[in-house]
Image 1 (cartoon, rainbow, N blue to C red):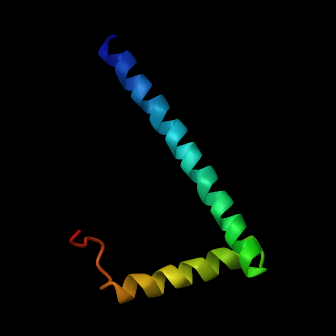
Image 2 (image 1 turned 180 degrees about the vertical axis):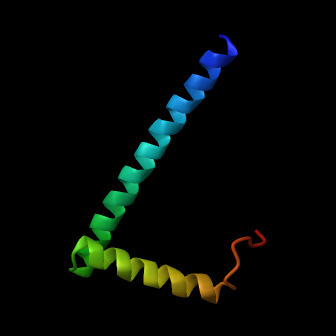
Amino acid sequence: MNLATAIESLLMNSRKTAHFCSMKITLGVRDFAAQQGVDEQTALQKGMGQKAVEFVKQGASIYRKA
């Protein structure tokens, strides 16, 4: 396998992973919306608000010690 083929293979795999992850997130939002009894846009706003509070409670730092 040459370098160009190897790079293309890695890019294809990362695209598949990114697509899968976005699909998983979309399903998660839909499930959360159903649980909350709200539409998807409201669920996104509510979920982001909850995550913001959680982020601040944990020190509002992007990098944390494990």
